[in-house]
Image (cartoon, rainbow, N blue to C red; front, side, top):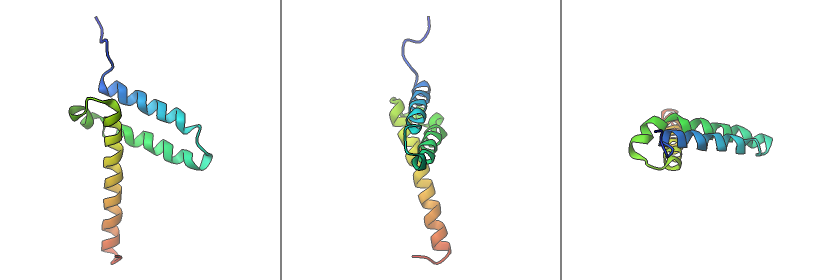
Amino acid sequence: MGRSFESVRQGVKSIADRWSRTTRALKKEDQQYGEKLVELAKKHSSESFVGCDDPLEAAVFSVLVEILKRQDAIESAQRANGEP
């Protein structure tokens, strides 16, 4: 007998697939951001499965981790260049 419910991993994939389809409906100049969100949602999905029971929570957590990492890299580069 197979699974009767979707795993978190399958749920994240479904969410990313929906976000990808939604991206195509965005204005041309915004599509690159939708595509990036899809990519980021999948980036930490394996690690997110351990602590998240909800696929949407896992996808959003993954995106937020990447956004914070990028923000930190920008701020570190600015400090290294003597910018406030």
